[in-house]
Length: 251
Image (cartoon, rainbow, N blue to C red; front, side, top):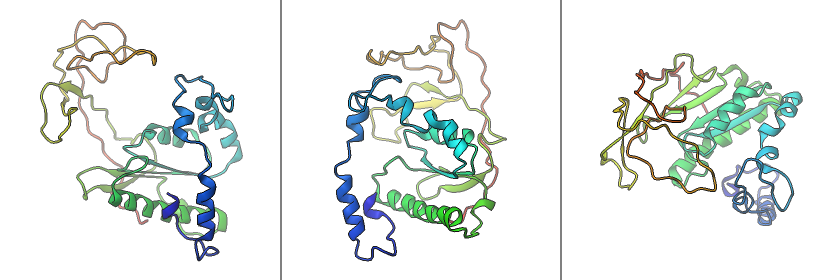
């Protein structure tokens, strides 16, 4: 990420960037810090803190809202923290904006990486120009949510919304189904359907982090939330998601 950072006026030769990269080499590995944390209240042995409760924005929500500092949230549909971006958008009270695209936390595909960070760099400058320099560039007149609808590689569409979930959105319940799609060369290739076959009636049970994953049956209802066994399968209505706006934003 440092290597593709936008250059600044006072660092023509890149000396400041090189110095910053060297300083970052002494940072603690994120993997080493979080891998021993088995539970929500696990304590970090080095800092003696509770990272899952104290390091994230959720543990400081009131302070963040009291500060009134504008926040720009950035996420990806393939990111491990997709839900967190929407939760923060809904719970922050200061001026905020959220963009989410068809990428992961750290895209490995060079084309996707270039697309994401080209947009990111542009949006960062627009956001800071408005809030730090007072440049009226219209960023606050735009819809606060910009999201990418995945259609096909190279054909994804950008849309905007003023709230989330989308007012016209409807849940679609999907169920595991036997057979392979043949669309991907993976041992995890499988089918999903909107029709429940009622092949398995036992609801998904919670697991202990210390216990290995149990052997899963071939078909389970993803939408089930109760614990125990069902005597019959409920009828689920399938729906579709309808975006508020089809306008492609100008980045």
